[in-house]
Length: 240
Ligand SMILES: C[S@@+](CC[C@H](N)C(=O)[O-])C[C@H]1O[C@@H](n2cnc3c(N)ncnc32)[C@H](O)[C@@H]1O
Image (cartoon, rainbow, N blue to C red; front, side, top):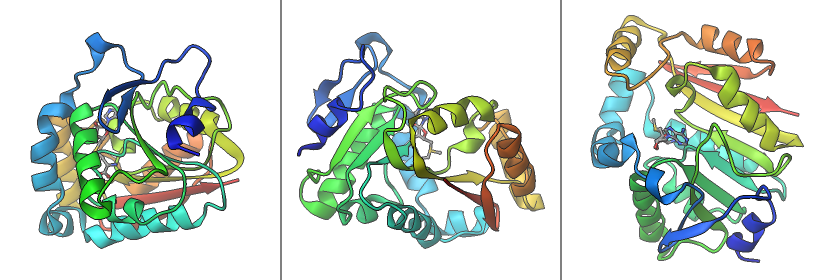
């Protein structure tokens, strides 16, 4: 079955899925489709995709982000996968291009989704039939409850001041026996703290907190996550 048909079955009643360009769909009204990340997409790929930037500032190699994505996919046995805030797939395109899972890639920015589509095509020759790219808002997702067996959202938590709000919609669309995999920039050492404070002043992030405090925030929002930390990156897993 095509991913378009699969997704039609899990959309909320009043939602229209409109094809806005090859391989990209949107649930956002035409007049609201532009987004702050559209203009930043090229810069994002150039800086954020750089392995030395990640190693020096955040203490991670991109292969560690890729490994977390593979771990999330490996937890899935037969359900739909959602990547909420997939961005340009700068770290994950190859993993997704090689996956056989049904995958929904959601992002608010068409600029980022275009880059994601182009990366999938680079790796697989086409956007694989088991993958769909959708422009939508992570805070107001267009899906029925219990739709996804695996939800992954990488590098997103630190963007939102209200952890409870982002978490409640992720939980709503997660199947009862599903898992959530999150990662977040964290202020675990002086460099991480300084750089996150700088990004906060630029309004690029909302939170500048250690892994421990982020885990506490998640728990206070009503969901317990297992955590592990590498450098200034926190990785969280909730299964059940
Ligand atoms: C820091 S990037 C992370 C991208 C990707 N997950 C990664 O690890 O490279 C944040 C992404 O969140 C998207 N985004 C920001 N606000 C959003 C929202 N309200 N709903 C969905 N996506 C959003 C941006 O367009 C951007 O692609």
